[in-house]
Length: 252
Image 1: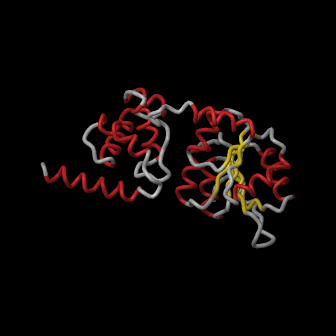
Image 2 (image 1 turned 90 degrees about the horizontal axis):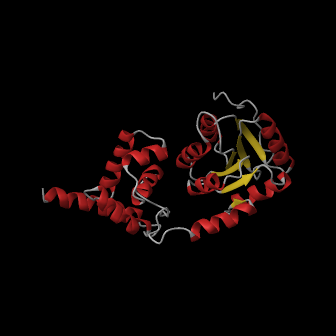
């Protein structure tokens, strides 16, 4: 059993109650948020104190939503969110952070978060925001809307940083490819992503293989086409990669 607050679980009073896993390293914050949610009829089925436990509890309880701090111990919030979404795509994840860092908000949304809220919000509005997420909406503090618009306007015309909804590349491979497109060297990518040079080279090899190209430069040239793919074109791209590999093999 995870060493977070897994023992504090609640059974939904009816089948229509939203079921949530709450992840936060601050016990006072967890208690306040849990009380607000449960007063509004939202059931907190389990609590986690760190990212590792959040992943385990989300897998165990299969909640409709995970509400988590972006800065967690053992496994950071963004990494934990990626694991949760990868294992159970139907689970929504919303970040509730003490930080109003716009960079963290953008990283969270890019990684798959259904919302980014700050703890200085009116917590009485939190249940309404989370129910909106469960209806398919995005929950975002008003202060970040302008930031996101500014970020989109500042996106280079080559669309570096933009990614298709479905892709043959993993999120980490996209991060490496984005930095490659910006001219970063292997060492610079390693420093930026806090990886070893060997790991970056491994990601680069995977990118080249998946895009059915021969070199790093060709992968960079292929990136704009991949970013523009139709959301349902992942299978076609994958098929194209296989055919490209066969053609290269046939020509020695």
